[in-house]
Length: 151
Image (cartoon, rainbow, N blue to C red; front, side, top):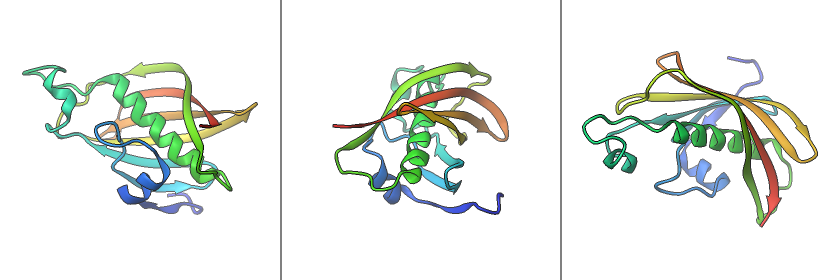
């Protein structure tokens, strides 16, 4: 663990930062974060996820697009922790994705560890590198761009 790492936080703190709610809140807990640098968050995948009613009956697989969304939510948590003086009408929007790769399926019973790292900011667009791992094995990776806007 990095010497500058801060302790994580629970769902109540996550809900203070992100606007997402059931069934679209996809981060269960933040394990740790390094201010202005990186964040480690988790999502526990259970059979109770609403998406499994249709993806796929008899063979439940957590959709890759939801792994990417969860990764984007983790970048949102890091981004908001990096910002000072966040106004109530500010929102953090998914702006783009590059180099997304899927390496393994995620199924009920898995715990997904999201590791996101701040890369750079240019003209209001923030770029992050993200990884989703299950049992230390890469499930998904991508570069995610987000934008800070007012509503």
